[in-house]
Figure: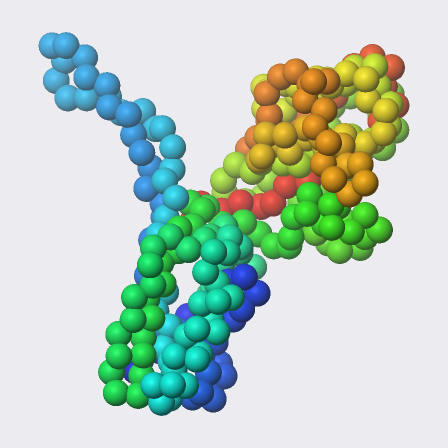
Length: 274
């Protein structure tokens, strides 16, 4: 049974590693994943015009197939397979490979698991449906805030990119930078008071009325909320506008409003299409 040169993969906190030379542990046999996602195009055909025009639409999520090998007696192999699948099936979590250990896919089980026996070895083929892009570690500020209100994101190092501006009382312009190679959907935290806050990034603007405390704008989940008793409470009724996306490179953020006395934090992952 040959082993993958990638070395290891990890999903839902469980690692399958070839660096462990104990033959009794599961091994990573192979990984099949695309080098880049598929872009879906819309075709436009004009009468009496040769050829077609194509417009970019969206990226498709990708399939990643992982083959894992198990060694031992039939009973031992079945016990190891059951143990692994019980920890993975039904999960939606980070999928990481050793060749790019600082990046992860958002992945989940997609198809049934297939097995192939050969002597004392069994090979399982597991197919994940994964995000079309990869994200840079670590963690997710939304979940950290909900799980443990006493933990400070600064202490955790929860996200790669962070821009924080204190004491905003009048119209101002700020700079943020996305060092990935694909756009990123931020989590914006607003703390303080304001009769009306306006926020513009990359020609996308939103406003929030009657801020008193901390409000979170989750641009990935398209949600606006407060956290009360460790639970998210929607404040979309105070919101107008669209959810901004952080483009690659340097961008200017424009902040204004009425009765402003706020601090604003913009958190976003470096995001990679390849």
